[in-house]
Length: 221
Image 1 (cartoon, rainbow, N blue to C red):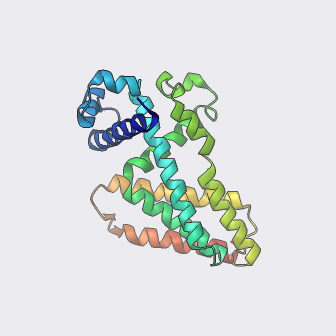
Image 2: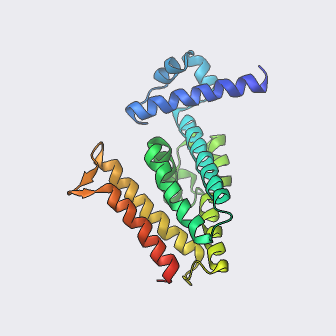
Image 3: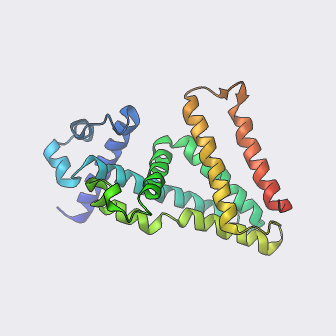
Protein backbone atom coordinates (compact mmCIF):
# COMPACT_ATOMS: atom_id res chain seq x y z
CA UNK A 1 0.00 0.00 0.00
CA UNK A 2 1.43 3.40 -0.98
CA UNK A 3 2.05 6.08 1.63
CA UNK A 4 -0.89 8.27 0.58
CA UNK A 5 -3.42 5.43 0.86
CA UNK A 6 -2.00 4.33 4.19
CA UNK A 7 -2.17 7.89 5.51
CA UNK A 8 -5.82 8.15 4.41
CA UNK A 9 -6.64 4.92 6.23
CA UNK A 10 -4.82 6.04 9.38
CA UNK A 11 -6.74 9.33 9.31
CA UNK A 12 -10.01 7.44 8.98
CA UNK A 13 -9.14 5.26 11.98
CA UNK A 14 -8.14 8.28 14.08
CA UNK A 15 -11.39 10.04 13.19
CA UNK A 16 -13.36 6.93 14.20
CA UNK A 17 -11.45 6.75 17.48
CA UNK A 18 -12.26 10.39 18.17
CA UNK A 19 -15.95 9.63 17.75
CA UNK A 20 -15.82 6.63 20.07
CA UNK A 21 -13.73 8.39 22.75
CA UNK A 22 -16.07 11.38 22.69
CA UNK A 23 -19.10 9.12 23.07
CA UNK A 24 -17.95 6.78 25.84
CA UNK A 25 -14.61 8.07 27.11
CA UNK A 26 -11.16 6.53 26.78
CA UNK A 27 -11.64 4.03 29.63
CA UNK A 28 -14.85 2.57 28.22
CA UNK A 29 -13.79 2.60 24.59
CA UNK A 30 -13.10 -0.75 22.93
CA UNK A 31 -10.90 -1.40 19.93
CA UNK A 32 -13.65 -3.45 18.27
CA UNK A 33 -16.00 -0.47 18.50
CA UNK A 34 -13.39 1.74 16.86
CA UNK A 35 -12.86 -0.84 14.12
CA UNK A 36 -16.60 -1.01 13.48
CA UNK A 37 -16.84 2.79 13.35
CA UNK A 38 -13.94 2.91 10.89
CA UNK A 39 -15.51 0.17 8.73
CA UNK A 40 -12.57 -2.20 9.09
CA UNK A 41 -11.81 -5.43 10.91
CA UNK A 42 -10.19 -5.50 14.33
CA UNK A 43 -7.18 -7.27 12.79
CA UNK A 44 -6.74 -4.43 10.31
CA UNK A 45 -7.06 -1.88 13.11
CA UNK A 46 -4.25 -3.53 15.09
CA UNK A 47 -2.05 -3.58 11.99
CA UNK A 48 -2.18 0.23 12.06
CA UNK A 49 -2.44 0.95 15.78
CA UNK A 50 -1.17 -1.69 18.18
CA UNK A 51 -2.99 -0.33 21.22
CA UNK A 52 -5.75 1.99 22.36
CA UNK A 53 -3.08 4.12 24.04
CA UNK A 54 -1.28 4.56 20.72
CA UNK A 55 -4.54 5.76 19.19
CA UNK A 56 -5.05 8.20 22.04
CA UNK A 57 -1.56 9.57 21.48
CA UNK A 58 -2.36 9.97 17.77
CA UNK A 59 -5.38 12.08 18.70
CA UNK A 60 -3.29 14.04 21.20
CA UNK A 61 -0.71 14.77 18.51
CA UNK A 62 -3.50 15.92 16.19
CA UNK A 63 -4.82 18.18 18.96
CA UNK A 64 -1.42 19.81 19.46
CA UNK A 65 -1.04 20.36 15.72
CA UNK A 66 -4.47 21.94 15.52
CA UNK A 67 -3.83 24.21 18.51
CA UNK A 68 -0.48 25.34 17.10
CA UNK A 69 -2.11 26.21 13.77
CA UNK A 70 -4.75 28.21 15.65
CA UNK A 71 -1.99 30.14 17.41
CA UNK A 72 -0.08 30.79 14.18
CA UNK A 73 -3.24 32.11 12.54
CA UNK A 74 -3.92 34.44 15.47
CA UNK A 75 -0.34 35.71 15.38
CA UNK A 76 -0.61 36.34 11.65
CA UNK A 77 -3.95 38.13 12.06
CA UNK A 78 -2.40 40.42 14.69
CA UNK A 79 0.97 41.09 13.08
CA UNK A 80 0.02 44.71 12.34
CA UNK A 81 -1.48 45.20 15.82
CA UNK A 82 0.25 45.81 19.12
CA UNK A 83 1.78 42.81 20.84
CA UNK A 84 -0.75 42.89 23.67
CA UNK A 85 -3.53 42.25 21.15
CA UNK A 86 -1.70 39.19 19.86
CA UNK A 87 -1.20 37.88 23.39
CA UNK A 88 -4.85 38.46 24.30
CA UNK A 89 -5.91 36.95 20.99
CA UNK A 90 -3.98 33.78 21.78
CA UNK A 91 -5.65 33.51 25.19
CA UNK A 92 -9.11 33.94 23.69
CA UNK A 93 -8.23 31.55 20.87
CA UNK A 94 -7.07 28.91 23.32
CA UNK A 95 -10.31 29.20 25.29
CA UNK A 96 -12.38 28.96 22.09
CA UNK A 97 -10.32 25.94 21.03
CA UNK A 98 -11.04 24.19 24.32
CA UNK A 99 -14.74 25.10 24.31
CA UNK A 100 -15.22 23.84 20.76
CA UNK A 101 -12.97 20.78 20.99
CA UNK A 102 -13.50 19.10 24.34
CA UNK A 103 -11.75 15.88 23.34
CA UNK A 104 -8.71 17.74 22.01
CA UNK A 105 -8.44 19.93 25.11
CA UNK A 106 -8.85 16.85 27.31
CA UNK A 107 -6.06 14.99 25.52
CA UNK A 108 -3.69 17.96 25.82
CA UNK A 109 -4.38 18.42 29.53
CA UNK A 110 -4.07 14.67 30.15
CA UNK A 111 -0.77 14.66 28.28
CA UNK A 112 0.69 17.40 30.45
CA UNK A 113 -0.52 15.59 33.56
CA UNK A 114 1.30 12.49 32.33
CA UNK A 115 4.47 14.48 31.68
CA UNK A 116 4.38 16.05 35.14
CA UNK A 117 3.90 12.70 36.85
CA UNK A 118 6.71 11.01 34.92
CA UNK A 119 9.56 13.50 35.40
CA UNK A 120 9.03 15.12 32.03
CA UNK A 121 8.41 11.79 30.34
CA UNK A 122 11.78 10.39 31.42
CA UNK A 123 10.48 7.99 34.08
CA UNK A 124 9.15 5.26 31.82
CA UNK A 125 7.93 3.29 34.84
CA UNK A 126 5.17 5.91 35.15
CA UNK A 127 4.16 5.54 31.49
CA UNK A 128 2.28 2.60 30.02
CA UNK A 129 4.00 0.48 27.37
CA UNK A 130 1.37 1.44 24.80
CA UNK A 131 2.19 5.13 25.26
CA UNK A 132 5.97 4.84 25.60
CA UNK A 133 6.18 2.79 22.38
CA UNK A 134 3.89 5.15 20.46
CA UNK A 135 5.63 7.15 17.72
CA UNK A 136 3.03 9.85 18.35
CA UNK A 137 4.24 10.21 21.94
CA UNK A 138 7.69 10.95 20.56
CA UNK A 139 6.28 13.39 18.00
CA UNK A 140 4.34 15.27 20.69
CA UNK A 141 7.50 15.75 22.75
CA UNK A 142 9.01 17.60 19.78
CA UNK A 143 6.19 20.20 19.72
CA UNK A 144 4.72 20.15 23.24
CA UNK A 145 6.20 23.50 24.30
CA UNK A 146 5.55 25.39 21.06
CA UNK A 147 2.13 26.81 22.11
CA UNK A 148 3.77 28.27 25.23
CA UNK A 149 6.72 29.63 23.28
CA UNK A 150 4.47 31.31 20.71
CA UNK A 151 2.52 33.01 23.50
CA UNK A 152 5.70 34.13 25.23
CA UNK A 153 6.99 35.58 21.94
CA UNK A 154 3.85 37.69 21.54
CA UNK A 155 4.30 38.98 25.08
CA UNK A 156 7.91 39.87 24.25
CA UNK A 157 6.66 41.71 21.17
CA UNK A 158 4.24 43.65 23.36
CA UNK A 159 7.06 44.58 25.72
CA UNK A 160 9.12 45.81 22.80
CA UNK A 161 6.35 48.00 21.37
CA UNK A 162 5.35 49.29 24.82
CA UNK A 163 1.84 47.86 24.89
CA UNK A 164 2.84 45.45 27.67
CA UNK A 165 4.28 47.09 30.75
CA UNK A 166 4.70 44.08 32.99
CA UNK A 167 8.30 43.41 33.97
CA UNK A 168 7.53 39.80 34.87
CA UNK A 169 9.24 37.10 32.85
CA UNK A 170 7.26 36.46 29.65
CA UNK A 171 7.11 32.71 30.21
CA UNK A 172 5.90 33.28 33.78
CA UNK A 173 3.08 35.43 32.40
CA UNK A 174 2.36 32.76 29.80
CA UNK A 175 2.10 29.99 32.39
CA UNK A 176 -0.11 32.16 34.61
CA UNK A 177 -2.46 32.72 31.68
CA UNK A 178 -2.39 29.00 30.91
CA UNK A 179 -3.34 28.15 34.50
CA UNK A 180 -6.35 30.51 34.34
CA UNK A 181 -7.52 28.91 31.12
CA UNK A 182 -7.11 25.39 32.51
CA UNK A 183 -9.16 26.37 35.55
CA UNK A 184 -11.87 27.84 33.34
CA UNK A 185 -11.97 24.77 31.10
CA UNK A 186 -12.33 22.49 34.13
CA UNK A 187 -15.24 24.66 35.27
CA UNK A 188 -17.10 24.41 32.00
CA UNK A 189 -16.35 20.70 31.75
CA UNK A 190 -17.80 20.09 35.21
CA UNK A 191 -20.88 22.15 34.38
CA UNK A 192 -21.91 19.86 31.53
CA UNK A 193 -24.66 21.49 29.50
CA UNK A 194 -25.23 24.17 32.13
CA UNK A 195 -24.11 27.74 31.41
CA UNK A 196 -23.93 28.70 35.07
CA UNK A 197 -22.19 27.58 38.27
CA UNK A 198 -23.58 28.85 41.58
CA UNK A 199 -25.71 31.30 39.56
CA UNK A 200 -22.59 32.75 37.92
CA UNK A 201 -22.70 33.06 34.13
CA UNK A 202 -19.69 31.23 32.69
CA UNK A 203 -19.41 33.82 29.92
CA UNK A 204 -18.82 36.44 32.59
CA UNK A 205 -15.97 34.35 34.00
CA UNK A 206 -14.47 34.11 30.51
CA UNK A 207 -14.81 37.86 30.01
CA UNK A 208 -13.27 38.58 33.42
CA UNK A 209 -10.29 36.33 32.65
CA UNK A 210 -9.59 38.37 29.51
CA UNK A 211 -9.98 41.67 31.37
CA UNK A 212 -7.68 40.47 34.14
CA UNK A 213 -5.02 39.38 31.67
CA UNK A 214 -5.17 42.71 29.84
CA UNK A 215 -4.82 44.58 33.15
CA UNK A 216 -1.86 42.48 34.28
CA UNK A 217 -0.07 42.92 30.95
CA UNK A 218 -0.88 46.59 30.34
CA UNK A 219 -0.39 47.92 33.85
CA UNK A 220 2.48 45.73 34.89
CA UNK A 221 0.88 44.18 37.97
